[in-house]
Length: 338
Image 1 (cartoon, one colour):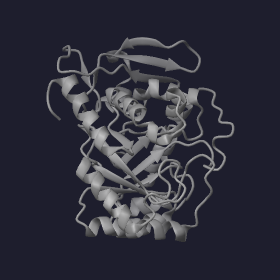
Image 2 (cartoon, rainbow, N blue to C red; image 1 turned 60 degrees about the vertical axis):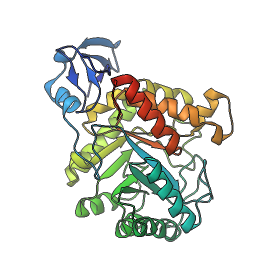
Image 3 (spheres, rainbow, N blue to C red; image 1 turned 90 degrees about the vertical axis):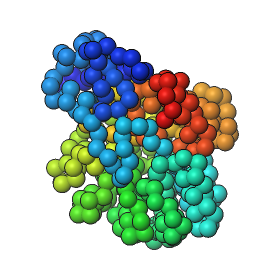
């Protein structure tokens, strides 16, 4: 792709007759930023962009894992690891983890993301058996407790995804973008399990050391586009794929901000977008706080900025506060209660 098209997203109850609805959601646009690797970007009317790109930008997104993409969806983070950057060890007991997941659902989480391997910068690989022992009992416990919400398994490994699906998981969220384990995508295809494809540069153990891009926005877009096309060619329908630009995964502060400022470009992938920024280092850097527990306000601010660009799913630790913020953001933006 030599030219890229970023919708200049607007929100609100009143729109001009020429406005086009973005991805069947709450945002709309009349113009786009046309971006190139070799030319200065320029703003053009939406009617001027190629028909195939326009179709992807405007097509209503399918329901994924029971989640409707015409309203913001909140993914609650349930780490059952001893070394997560934010809450490592807090939910390592199965019973406590199940209670935490139930509390997230009660607070307004639409989907629970269960992870048994930390992928924070510098994290080491976890043995498959250990990861299964961490996540399977928790997912089983959530289902036994009556949780009917979608549950995603945050893993790079086929065996873990198999065990999690057997326990009740309904989506596979792979931070490697299905590049770590060659058998994971075929497993999801055979069992018709929706997937989330995230971009990461390098492995968690080393990705933070010296990340480099020619153009981070376009490089990440191209990488996700290639991987999504490979998954589609393998038999996973585009309608069952989510895309995540991978904020903080092999990216500097400047890289993260460049992606966030123009994240609406990723709607041209033709999939719903997931944004995970909760409590990440760049928020602490800008807010001048090293304590991850003090990053809630910043995390919510970035999440709402993502919603304003049409991002459909936000991945968060602080479900109660985020649900309140999203509800009031919607009410004040559209004059109606979500």
